[in-house]
Length: 404
Image (cartoon, rainbow, N blue to C red):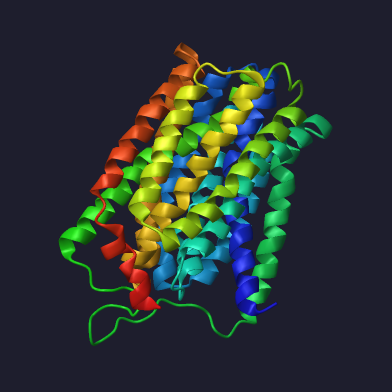
């Protein structure tokens, strides 16, 4: 295996662990902690909020340090830091210690997206498929959080759900440090061309077009963050309420959640191919429209029907992720790409943090049916925003040909 392939594997493992760690608590709270500590699910959710705030705010600093210092060094810090923080969560004895430890998890988790994604797209002409593969690993991390947590809760205890992946992440981090020490070609931001003021991988784009595209990116990123967080964080609890007839244990609930997330993860591969070969505007609009349809269908469903529609809406929720990442990768110069991704994910993760109190409030007052109605309206807003993108065939897709 070539060193570039090994590096890509490490980046994929990092994305897997990043989403795994951020959602362990969601399953712990839904499956065990609520009953063990005598605190309602709605009351437990806010303790995860500081971690998601750190997840968003920390991305700006992480992207800046990575561009100025070393992207590889930041990824090494990510592996070891997030693993150690997870172990601290497992040692917590009260909700405030949980909140403090989860904040550390979020701070180290913030490193991955601005740094790892910039490394994934660096030097590539077509970025849709690499970002999709990387996204699949991230979504499998989302899926595995519920599966791993449910299994460990039933067989060992909820604390082990934080200990085991924490130790594994630290070991991966140590092996990554050994790997990059043997790599004499540490990736750095490519210099700006003295002829055009732009990199070879970024064509000249009219300022008003650039502004409009980034406006769409940030608007849809914000709304997409609400949708992603609401579905991924709440799904274990949704299934506990709506799959009563077919899931009677934490392990089974974990398996059903894993099934939904893992099947849906591969939507990114199809979307990655489509955005590399077809109009991003059309693909984006279709994804958003299907989200709205499936959320409306989910409002009153239970049992097998709820499971099938959950797979359907997660397919298009996960499918949206590589679209904005591809747009950022094409629009941003290499030397500030980490910071561009950082801004995109600050927007996304800040909304994700605010989504947690919303989930608790909506669920506590009206239940998950109302939450799905809100998500359907949000998806229709994204659908409308996609028509603000310029003609993809003439502008966005043309960037591929200029770099090939």
